[in-house]
Length: 256
Image (cartoon, rainbow, N blue to C red; front, side, top):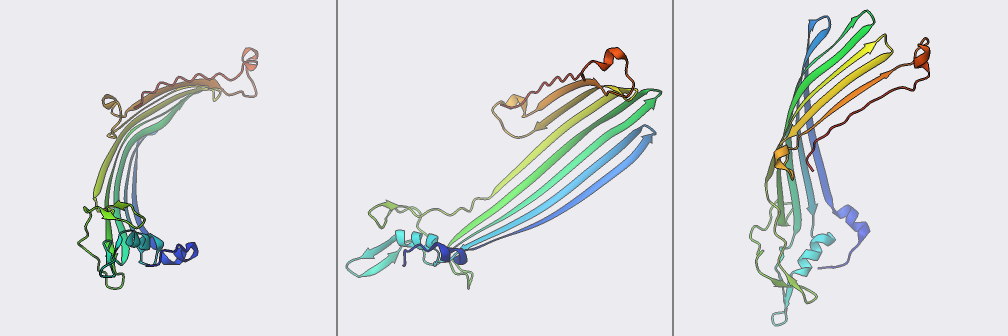
């Protein structure tokens, strides 16, 4: 077969398509427990389907190169033996993703005289399932949808140029993964006279992802405390000359 590489022609010879379908369902329920406390329930479900198709006919350089590389010529019979199936190469892959997120949350604000307290606390769980079904066919005929089922992947064939090798095996391995996350968070902020504030924030995350230190379970936690003031039109003289004060403490444990 022709062994020339024509970059411009390759643009039109390749048939590579991808189709993605995504559906997202969201649910948000809000209930007012008191005047200063709200309860929220949030849920999200997402489904994705991704289908890819890459057909490389025997006119593409990639396919012609494989066919020619494993072709043997018999000097006695003057006949070519095609160890690599003649025809195109079809690679397809179907991937599905299903994700579920569930969160509960308490939030609110309480004001009395010059004092105001803002608070929020919640927890979230999430799970994502992914499945992939790849398939490759040699000697594929795009008109009739047929391919060569029996191919010798074991024999070490001599190759054109004096080298040798085996035919690349097909990639038809099915894969599936499940990932889960659990999170908890809280934030409390106290403000005086809409000028001075102090707050505390905490969060913890966990996942089932494998890491170097299994005992930590890929969990991380941190605590942040902060305080400061906002300069208003009227401030005591001893505070007017002070810069804004901020104190941040960050403690984090993570999987290294």
